[in-house]
Amino acid sequence: MWYALIERQRQWLRTWGAGAWFAYDAWPVPAMGQTASSCFADLFGPLLGLADEAPPFAIDAIALDGRRSGIAERIVARTPFCNLRRFARPNAQRAILLCVPLAGHAAVMMRETVEALLADGDVYIIDWINARDVPLAAGRFGLADYVAMLDGFIDTLVRDGRPLHVLAVCQATLPALGALTLRAQRALAPPASITLIGGPLDARINPSKLGLAANSHSLEWCSRHLIDVVPAGFAGHGRRVFPAWLQQAEIAFVYPHRYVSLVERYARAASQGNAEAFATAGRALREYAALLDMPAEYFLDIVDIVFQRTLLASRAWRVNGTLVDPAALRDVMLITVEGTRDAVTGAGQTHAAHALCSDIAPHERRRLDVDGCDHYGLFTGEHWSEDVHPVLQAAFAQSEVAAHRHVSST
Image 1 (cartoon, rainbow, N blue to C red):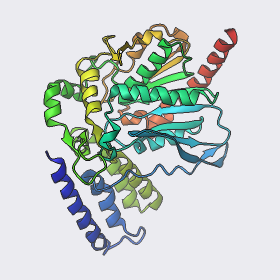
Image 2: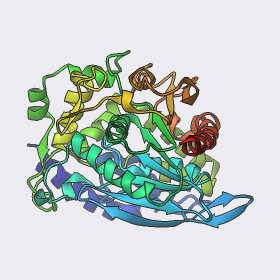
Image 3: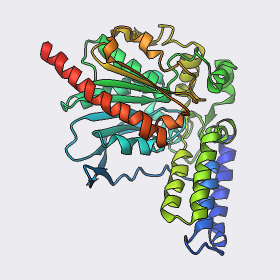
Image 4: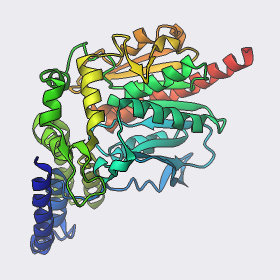
């Protein structure tokens, strides 16, 4: 397979890049030293996969009630395939669990989402570990394993007594809805709210390019042509993965729009000599291009269960033998969010949750369509900060009042 050859090329490029660093800075821009080498590192390094690790979240403080408040970051739970990372702020009255898709991007891509949500409470995020670094002895990780892992995390979070809000993005909407449904079927109390953003809950509706591609080949073909084996030199040596270098090709050729917009922002800051904007734009580029290998079984589960057989939408999805019936959910606020220019998740695929969760009361439902918004704008940028986040803030407060009334009445 290709993995070992591509990794050797990356090692060569890392060596060449280190040697060329000083040459690039032979003609520095006076206003911003090392601009040329920064451009190489920010623009070309990520696309070539030259970074060994994803950049850190590095959220040290946020503006809260007119002043800067410190943020404490730590890992509160560890599993072989991910860490549950907590960002805590002073006097937080609620907890927010941010379910990140296992779709090739590192969780740090949602740094801006975390920073905004900290205005509302403590934020817990699923921080994926690169599958190439997970030893074979850790076993497999499929879609059912994500569901079970979320169930355990939610158990941990509900015990601290604060209102819990579960927010899932893109492909993570399916395991999040699955975990919460199975908990409801076991008569466990729901969170205060469930927010599903840009997720393919019913991929039959207005199929996107991604959905059409997933249906264009058999599962056997995908396993044979899209799965590689981690070579020697990594802790996960021998593990079958959907490799990050295929994701890099997708960024460059299939969905280039997001990357191009980030490059334009970066170039504008460089041309204006704005050091702060230049650093911020460079960080956004590195976060977006921070990619990781996915466990093969999880990737193939998504192709099979989400796109080819659409088992949740067909009401035929079983997790470890138990049928997932979203109609079991009730006494919880359900918020679904879609963008009218989302090329990753087709229109109506996320709002399909309302038909699936048929026993949730009408007054506990919210549907938000963001005009002119693409997929990434649903959780980053102006549309996120101006259109989506304010709606979520209001929904969080309303759902907590409703949950308190329900508890009081029982």
